[in-house]
Length: 208
Image (cartoon, rainbow, N blue to C red; front, top):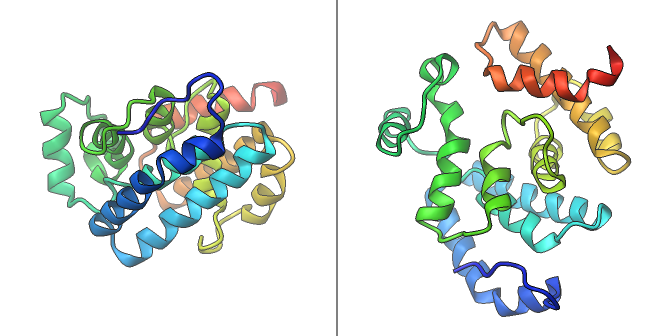
């Protein structure tokens, strides 16, 4: 089981204490993801840890959230819908149209129920890593940003701008990524989760 941060316990001590846990968890995650998604996952975890060091957040917690952020990604659409109903998740119109959008919510639940993670902020970072949400914590923003900028990402609109912003100002990086995401989805004609609009408006409120 993941041990919560306690007073006087450093990241280095915790990493040493939980080394076998991380090794086992990594192996479990590899088993449930395809090769491309697993490569992405490891890259997100490492990117998140680097961002955490830059912004004086726990690299261990950031790595853990990154490692688990897509743990439900490779489930079949039918299975995602079944699990969402089983766990009583509200399914909005965007998720009904594209069940893959449920992977973040389900990932948070599986991280707690299957992988025994009890750090609520880590679980929240997993839950909101695709849509974001208004007034995110530093850790939540780190996972959201790391998911977008990791090195294996195919070229995305404003990707290089987001990478530059990520290590200078987290909120600026959020603005860039949210603008890029909404433009990209809009051009595709994809239905967009309402919380993504709320997040965009929150991080762009100073621009209006």
